[in-house]
Amino acid sequence: MGDKSLTLEEKKRYHARVRRSNFRARLRLEGFQVSDSESVKPLPSRQAVIEKYRTKVKI
Image: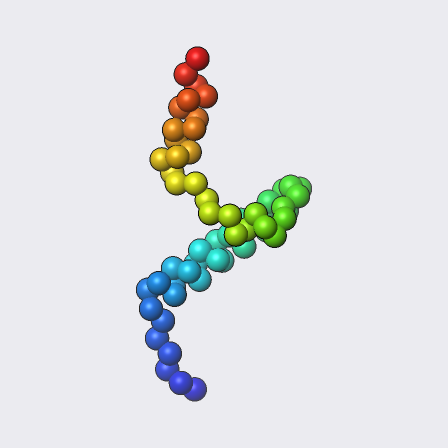
C-alpha cells in the first residue's frame, strides 16, 4: 500500500461533501423532499443569513 498524504484542501473538500450528504440524509429522515441539485448549491454565509433575518424583524 502506498502512503498517500492528503493536503488540507483535499480534507476540507471531503468534509464539506460529507457534511452536505449528512444534512440531506437528516432532511429526508425528517420527511422533507430533497433533490440532488440542492446538494451542490453553495450555502449562504453566516453574515448573509443574519442580515436576511434582521431585515424581516425590522418592521
